[in-house]
Length: 175
Length: 199
Image 1 (cartoon, rainbow over the protein chains, first blue to last red):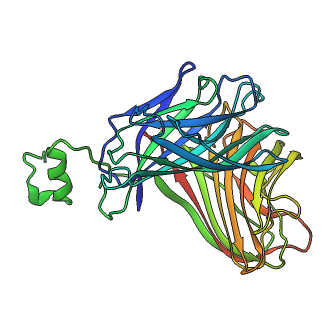
Image 2 (spheres, each protein chain N blue to C red; image 1 turned 180 degrees about the horizontal axis):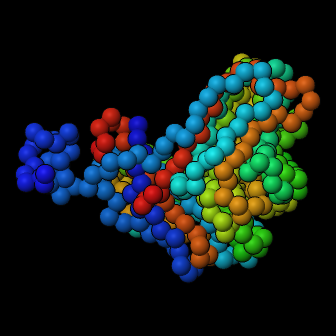
Image 3 (cartoon, chains in turn orange, red; image 1 turned 90 degrees about the vertical axis):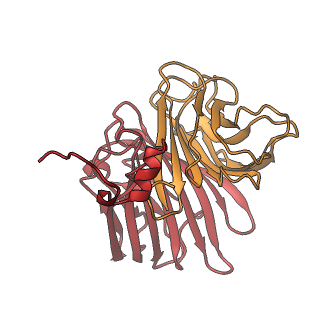
């Protein structure tokens, strides 16, 4: 399996991040987010929405997380429009502290199945912070060609970076 | 001598070239590049130096065993031993209980494990560590890792997020055992560089 960079984007000002016109020539996608949000708290959450699909209930997810004191688990509600992909830090984290999330979207071009998403992520603020792992399901057989990335409470801060990679399973470069 | 024509037979991968002419982008260079690999035995530390700053992230993959069933690991000797504050938040499962713990304000090292929570066992364990934005001189270094250690009736699986409060680009680091009398009996480690677009 080989991994190839598709696109990278660093926010010049607060906002969400969008990757569109994603080529359908790979087998899996991996998204790496390094950043923080503008929410006035330490942990915030990274969400993704696939294909700009706002149909209620098309995005499902579960998580297992820890905050340094308690391990907890939860799930999305029935009308979600995005997949929770784990913790990042917010504006109340110390300066120069960023969280990170690694998201895998498996078999994203397969039109015979719904799409599986798995992620790990977190942020440590030397005495606060949160981390965990999530699994998600996008209930559509459509090829994924767009990913919108956003924070649960507010926007990503400037300097937040996202990198999109394509993974192949062929020994030939490209898919 | 200038190239005056390019025929299908002169291209090493004619299928890829034909696909390119059809308007499809081609990707030549994998973004996961092995930087260094090695085996270790009967040691309290293994490490990497002269890490180039030309990647976006680092990924370390390790499999190994330890001499005892409770070995703590840390990342230390960063850039030859600079002063920094390390901390970590850990989520751990031991087959019956899920717990979360925290290490704070560690001087000069970042703990990958915590006390008796997610230490390595004496059977083969695996460790995958991601150091994101390791060469960025404007941010502290965020680390994500997973440890898996099952011994058919005992063991741990854990996930961690850590912080190394230094804005230096990382060019050297070690993974070390923390407690006296504990060491790695054998193992293999590989450090990868993850490139971003344009690198």
